[in-house]
Length: 424
Image 1 (cartoon, one colour):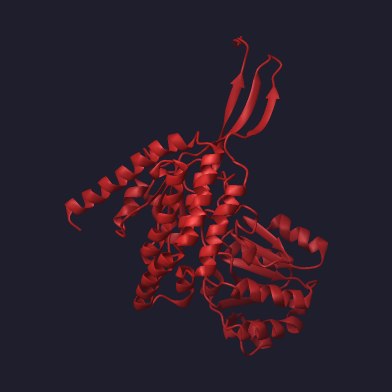
Image 2 (cartoon, rainbow, N blue to C red):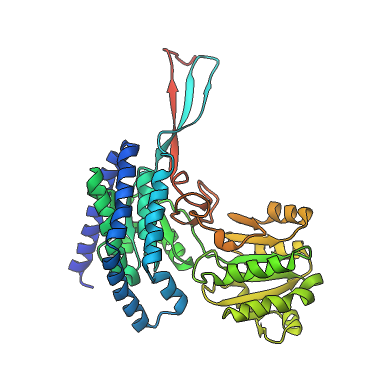
């Protein structure tokens, strides 16, 4: 790339940043009605524009197939009428949520007569960097708008056409509601240099939200001083306790792994208590293989079922995002917790058990953003949590953890009212 082209990218991103900063100031005081009007109109526009969105998506799918992208990646990229309807319904769900801005979170009086309130406020400008899932364009744009932020969206090059078509629907909503065009901006270039320039917009961007793997997180940590909502891999575990209902376990495991293999809430590792492994493993493997899943496991699991392929050390740290699962036989819940602590990504982990005592141990000791009991890890989703949608699953521990919805996208300020008090 020539120096001139680099300067062009830098100037482009500076312009996006300036526009977003100005829009954020306006959005901070936008009415609930205006924001909801924009969201509902955008939902209508998504439905109206469905043919052109699918046409744009077909271009991305064809390019992805020609590049040899694997099936799970293409599944994340693919849009159809049902997925477009789900995006539209998600926008309407976000519109139906209470406005998270300007809420009095707590209030109290001091002996000196001061009245103190803690009031929710927007964060400002959010930069979202994501990869192949074009629905993130709608989800992130809508969530940030509802929470009073301006947002700069940098989608993956593989979803460039799809994201652009979705962005047009969001722009329709902003126009009808009379909100600034720069409230939601999509970086209009595939050039990877734009990511670096976005990470340098410290004067304009308040928070970065990455939707990618370790390499993206490492790059942001190295290159940027902008705070980040960390979303690491979804190395999700299911522990099958000796008190598990066998049929429930089979149903949950095949759903958690195979419903959609390419999402971050898909189960990647199965841990089974040794005392029930011989009894339960065969049926679980039957279901997984019937669903098209490759099953890998440790030596003990292989000895129980010859269809299991030998797992390597790398398997325990793998986020497959594909129809592959690894199985390890463990002594008990403490051994399962030790495995998760060593190999997990603090995203979502589940236990299947009817023993309340064992379940309590698991819930209290596993250090993950989402912990589930007797339920599929595929429920690790803001929409399923009643948040309308999510901007991501935060695996960090500061400010927000788990699904990041409209409430998690706010900060707060203290409002102090007095009657002339002076501090002695």
